[in-house]
Image 1 (tube, rainbow, N blue to C red):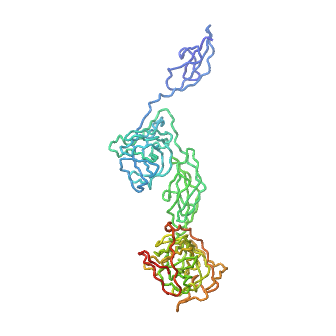
Image 2: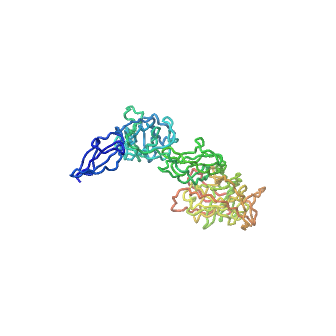
Length: 609
């Protein structure tokens, strides 16, 4: 084979002749640089050294396109920009000359809007660059990355705040690894595919990140207009470019709701699917299962799979969720989920109940009454001492239950007032009066423990004995008796209700918490037998107290047991005297009124009763 001749014609059946010869070669290919735009047909013949020529090949069709133009670059200025600060959540900074970004600590974000042009005919978007310039603010530089994302949601430069800002996660356009130098231009290179479907419309970019040291940039309000943010778009003729996203996400499923104690509704759902990714979800609340999910009933827009609706009033509500993507395509609404918000529960009610009577009794002066003394005394070892207090309890407010009981007492200034021993308060039965009770006729039943103080380490100090609300539940609306006992070998002493300073007197602080449906208190069938003193001194004309403290001698019903309140931490100093004070016991029968305790504001010289 000596070579080949190549011919070009205007149709498939053209004749391969000398007038349409492209070239003669010895190899198996040829380049035709003279073909004008349009369709052409090529045939090839072979020849040998003797001049013999083969038949022409079948025709091959080739189309030469129109020549490609130069790339087109368009610079798009921001049509709006503003920063928003979590630390000033309701403040608008649309007229500020700076934009700020920080993700840690008190967060900061910035929003920019751009009115994008449509792509030129025959050209595709092939490059996106966001140009920004760090400001001269001393805090403008940052070692943290700054990310630009396309987000949905409406906002205005003069109205956007941290509270009403667009909160969807959006789709990441691109990022700057850091902003290390102030007053310097930076270029954030973005993905053209992210903006392809927004060409010809308005797009919002959110700048976020920045780590713990915020980054700051000039806004479009900067004095030097060349420092304002701008998008530089490059369109290349002859390229297809990213195709617009026209597919909507699938509808969310598994929508459900629940209500917390404050009446806030938590709505959750399962994730939707989308060919290019879901940008976020919108949650709507309506009055019926067939309500239309529209802007007027929008609860919120989020990027996660749950939202809290704190604005639902008591009653039944229905929730629907839709998914959307970065191109603005919106899914069909989910099925409606029903949630009922109950009527609000009232605030807790606190009642402070002063002691209606109190007195100490001493084994060493068994027949002596100390009802008018300014002190109460407690000791379990050696010559025992006990104290009794009566309280007229209120009834529980309608729809509320007793959830907290605190007995407030204050140690006296007596040198022997502090004690390392525990002091226990118990509810006991039996009749007694402040002016008549003695060691001999005191209530002696074991009773039911209300609570205790682990020790009373410091004199003239307030202490709170946290009790079990269940112990007093059945005594509400009546009179109850508390016995203070214990104290170890070194007695504890407290101010009585006869103290000069009335604020030092014992009190019971009761807290009633409203409940949705408080069950009626039940009295257990079992009863405890409370032994009674042989001789109980009763004041002339005194009525028999009601409640536990006013039970008649004999059978005494145990109190009903409601749900107890959470324990409260013990209060009071932790320093404990290293050496308890030992005081002389009084001689029985020598006096009916022991020396009074020192005034709370004065120190020592007090003799034990």
